[in-house]
Each structure stands twice: as structure tokens, then as C-alpha cells.
Length: 296
Ligand code: GDP
Image (cartoon, rainbow, N blue to C red; front, side, top):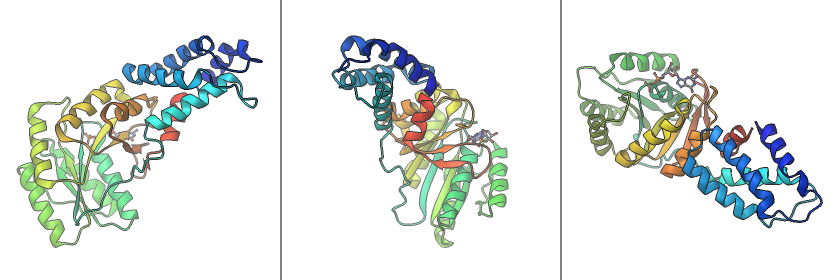
């Protein structure tokens, strides 16, 4: 799509060759293409509107560089502004600067990839010489406890022995005590999800958050769900004050626009992206890579 958008803009700007600056009129048609491309990539319409306005302001009156065709020049402005919107070169690394064991809580809807991401994150932290403890705190779906235990065995990382008969808050308290006594640096909590946000779930998660005071509350978003992921992220952020996002399933054909919108709408950064079902398919997020995916 990068080539397509680029080609389209070159076509739009054909008339402009030989002129010195881009004008309101020249830029107008190009911005229509940019707007469509972003909507097609599933970027939230309000985010698109504000964004296009910003690009318009920057593009109009810009001198046409000798070295670039005007279409490419607009693409460059769009690229740079999108990267800025995603946080630019902001440090998106995990904040683990607290007295160990540092709590990380993963939240999100069922099927988003929470349990898998817990395993991936534990593997990532182990590679950084941390000693993570995985804690299943989803007692409504007993298979989730087993799923995390299986992941733990694969990774040779300890999984707290939660029981489906326990209350999530009790599991969390006991896990914290256990981790403190046994010298774990980080505790990763896998919390329950639902098919949609409901009050009961949120109250439970608020209780866990208040108890654990997690250093990181990461919202796990399924990139394939597009705009819905943005609404859900906002819901979780309003209630729990998330600190960041893990965007999963970017290996599918999701365009990634939802990710960009999540950051723009909640103000919280994407910290990691999931790129497959395997446990090493987790990447630290880079804004420019996602932007290239959206534009290309
Ligand atoms: P949870 O209900 O939020 O705990 O979700 P799970 O961790 O059980 O994941 C749901 C499904 O999504 C599983 O089949 C995972 O293998 C799959 N999954 C998770 N993350 C990714 C990812 O980044 N890419 C792909 N392709 N699949 C993923």
C-alpha cells in the first residue's frame, strides 16, 4: 500500500512539478488520499481528522524539494507525523524501578492473547536476567490456569500454584508473599477476561490493582479487532489507569491503525507487539515500523 499511496499522491501532484511551493489546492486532493488510506488501515476517524489537519498545516507552503517528488514529500510529512503521534522516539520500555518483586498485571478481553503474552513477557524478562513468577489469577476459566502452567514448563519459569477454588485477590496476596520469600524480581499476573467489559470484571480488577499497586498495568489488545480494540482500551484505561498496551496478532492481516488510535485516544503507549503464537514472537514496539506497515 505504501507504493499505492505514494503512486496515488504522485498522480495527484503531477501538475505541481515545476512549481516552487505546495498550495492549499494542490494539497487538498493528496490529503483526501491520505485520509482514505488511514481509514482503510482502521485508524479512528476522529484521529484521522485531527491528523489530516496537522499534515495540511505542515504541507501547505512547504517548498517542493528538488530531490523529492511532491507526492513523496507529503508521504514523508505523513510518515513523520504518524511516528510523532505514536510517541516518536519516546522510551516505551517497561518501568520496573520499584522494590522487588515488581508487579505487572495483564488485563484485556478474553481471547486477546493475555495468557500467551504473559508467557512471552516472562521469557523476555528472563532473557534480561530477571527472575519472573507467573501467576494465574483467572479462576473462571480453569483451562487458563493450566495453559499458563504449560507455558511455564516450556519456558522453565515457575508458575504459582493457583487453585480455581480460590478468590483472585487471595491468589494475588499469596503469590506476592511467595515471591518475596523466594527472591523473585517480577510477578506477572494473568487476570480474567470477558467477552466484553462488564462492571463485575472491572470491580474485581480494581480490587486486584489496589492490592498489588502494579508498576505496570498492560492492556492486551487484539489488533485484528480494529476499532473495537480502541473502545475497549479506553474502557479499561478509564477504570484501571493502564500504563501501556501489548498489541497482539500483528502477524495477521490487521493493518495496525487501531494501535495508532489507541495511543492517540488513551495517551498510553504501545510497549510490545505480538507477532505470532510462539513464545518468542514478542517485539518491543517501534513506532516507525508500525507506521511503515500502515502506509505500506
Ligand atoms: P487470553 O484469553 O487473552 O488469555 O488469550 P490467549 O493467550 O489464550 O490467546 C488466544 C489465542 O490467540 C490463542 O490461540 C493464542 O495462540 C493466540 N495468540 C496470542 N497472541 C498471538 C499473536 O501475537 N499472534 C497470533 N497469530 N496469535 C496469537
